[in-house]
Length: 113
Length: 116
Image 1 (tube, rainbow over the protein chains, first blue to last red):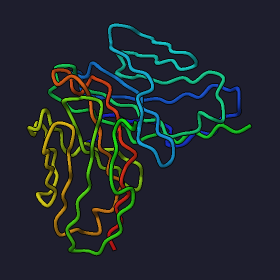
Image 2: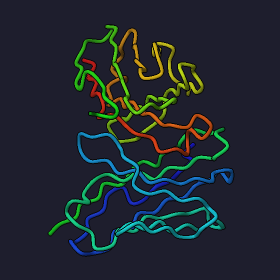
Image 3: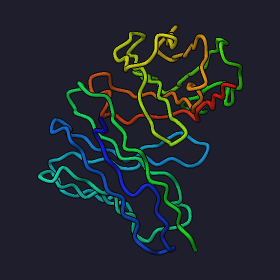
Image 4: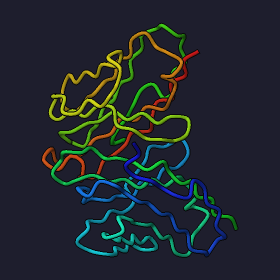
């Protein structure tokens, strides 16, 4: 059973465009939603995270939008750059610590000039 | 000054062999993890250790045995390797045991295991 569904599997965006990756979760106990970025040959690294007490969190060009009622959250990358080309993973867990991080299947983003 | 390091980076071996992957973190974290990333990039937790004690053991065959000699090290030993064990294995660590899964996890560079 896949607890976090991520789409699209791959994404090609023009330089300067907006990249949007979507995730949906099933477990209503989830209350912490991080995004990890992974470059080829490297381990994932935390990019940005959100708790459900806010509907949006922005850090530089990266924004998480969160819709608690729909159990969905998304990552928006504004002014996408070739250096943003990587695989992005959404994840979810509960802060009580009962559930380890559950990752989505990843989105391979390619930003082309 | 690498935060989380793993050795070896690549491991090629025959079916049936036993192998180990080592992980060390110099971040002073109390919690360490092993993840498996398959060929489709799916990332799944295998084990979690807090201060040398096992706290999570997801549905992993008992051929996989983690060993934590101290809180800075978490090694992964795999017995009787099978073709399906081929994957990239990531070690990770985080600081706060009470909030282990919400605390930022720092991943190592990965070990690509290929079983022939």
